[in-house]
Amino acid sequence: MTDRQTRSASDVVILGAGPAGLVLGNLLQDSGIDCVVLERAERAHIQTRARAGFLAAGTVRILERHGLAEGLRRHGKAHSTCEFRSEDGRFRLDYGGLGRGERHTVYPQQQLVTDLLTRFLAAGGRVEFGTEAVAVLDADTDRPAVAVRAADGRTGRWRARYVAGCDGRRGVARRSLPAGSVRRHHCDHGVTWLGLLAEAPPSLDAVGYAVHERGFAGHMARTSEVTRYYLQCERGTPADAWSEARIWDELDLRMRGADFGPLQRGRVVQRAVVDLESDVLEPLRHGSLFLVGDAAGLISPSAAKGANLAVLEASILAQGLIDDLVHDDSEGLDAYSARCLTYIWRAQEFSHWMIGLLHGPSGSDATALFQNSLRRSRLTSLRTSRSRQDWFAEHYVGV
Image (tube, rainbow, N blue to C red; front, side, top):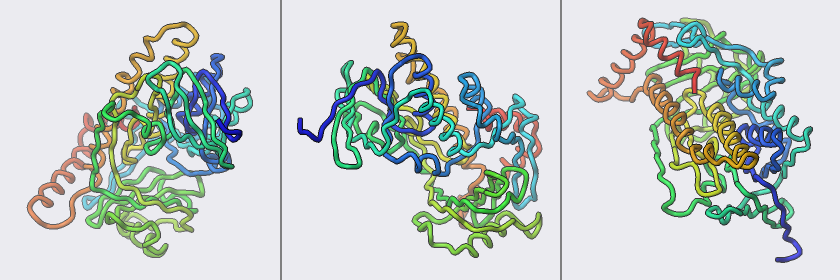
């Protein structure tokens, strides 16, 4: 070992300081378990990167139960209405009064991450910022290691009893899985969105889903001055291909501003191209390595399930680790993969249904006409059938 290498140890090494990693870190620390979070980015970056902000009722309950909800209680906004617009007009669903009567809480993910991080550090938690995990080693033993590289080039290893891969779809946890040890389920839905963040007040007091012959458009309020929009575009479209004027004109057209009122415009401050894909790995445990959040399964953003699944999986893993390390009971860890996959596949099914509801094939051939007629029928059923509305509300808010 050279003089530029270091060694450290912890009961649990957590890869990634997103919602999953920080919920897990807080719960383990509260139970007296020594853990460290390794994060490639710097602190300022993770506290400012904009992500989805719709927290399910179950997610809020988890955060409240563990004392992690102070910020969202003060600043989160209850939300329970969505509006659909199509060639048949528009209709609204107060899903908070349907199904199980549950609502979303709108709370930007970067604010939740800031809350979780602040609490973790204030209680003495360790986060190694600017530290890139490059490999998970010896995961099939009871003393796995994480090889790391710091921003200044120093290398090192963290030894642990367990490693939690909360580092996303392209993180080192996935890359370190032994060949042939995992089954990957993948689906490219053939749909691409241009995701936009605009410094513009919300244009309606609901989540807006617009189905149009030119493609899908979506409206999701973030704050009183910031709104998230989505525009379906052709695969391969660069994020900067459309001018702001074209973006707003296309949003107005697809959301039928001429019929229902023009959108409030503002400066587009963030753009990203999103190819709608679904991706699930089985199993989620590989010896001493566990996959959590996007590392376990990627879900399309069509139903706002990603962060909610991440928090749920982190809470399940935390309890399993606490039972094992504190009470010498491994039952929870043994059941982790199967238990989480039940939730993941249920969320995937609803997300897949939403993709079919909001997108239809282009063209006028027989197959396109048939598929678009089915899509139109689904919207009609959602508008007119109370049983379908109750089903939608339960799965839209639930995880």
